[in-house]
Amino acid sequence: MTEQLSTWDDLRRVADELELKIHLAGMEARDRWQQLQPRLVKLEQQLSHAGERATEAVSHEITAIGQALRKLRDDLQARQN
Image (tube, rainbow, N blue to C red):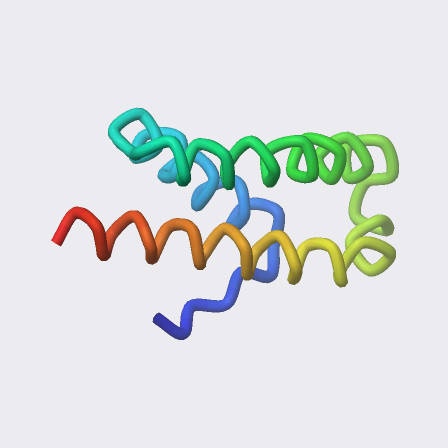
């Protein structure tokens, strides 16, 4: 999958999808999600405090979290198939 997550809305959408799938996932996926979730919360707080001007400041973190979220989602989808 070559989907690029570049906005907060994209990240939140994938995170919401993951939360639904995690309910059915194994402990490995839960552990990976628990490592990603605090980073997502921290990023959300930074963005809410600084607004749009924060996007540039945290773009690297958005990209890193986006890649980790996509990988986890893809791994979960592969397990379901």
